[in-house]
Image (cartoon, rainbow, N blue to C red; front, top):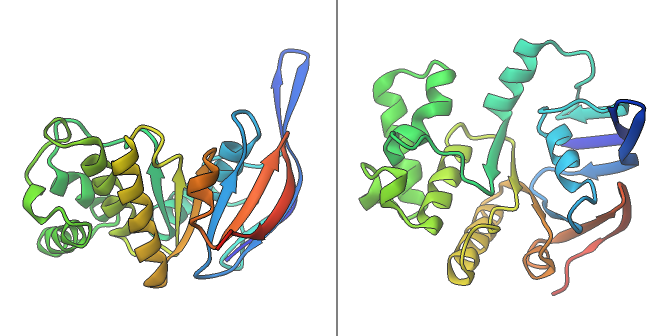
Length: 226
């Protein structure tokens, strides 16, 4: 699914270079549930951006589902992001004036799915995350946990090969956070490949594998605690 070899990312600000990632070697197989954990500034979000084809490494090789990502043009990268990767962000990134149903429809709209089929699939996905009775509600009418469930439904609606979640519980209270983590577990049990980025070791240990990153390097790669 994901194969990284010697991934390095350097940001330049004037004469100063900041090495965000240093020679990352990482393989993630289909149907794995992986947590990438580390403190703020460790490089974990940079790693997710490269995994999600939102950013390019300074050097190294990255293959996604057997396809080398380096050198792909904008259109192909956009197609990969829309059709093969589902994103879940800490701040939800929902359109504020669109209903839950309309937010979930967006990836299907960009993929050119006909209106009726688009609405049916979006409604089915909202029902799957227990929001069948909130489809016409706008984000301001939903709780934090409900907004994150809408974001997860949107990430899943295009049936992506992999879901990338960046601090998905970071803006939620404890109860809502537990509900979201439980949902990820259910999705993994159903066969979904998931990579979750978190600074919370309690959240990470609910995955099946934990990759610990510090100062841009992988310092530990282990099975999660039982």
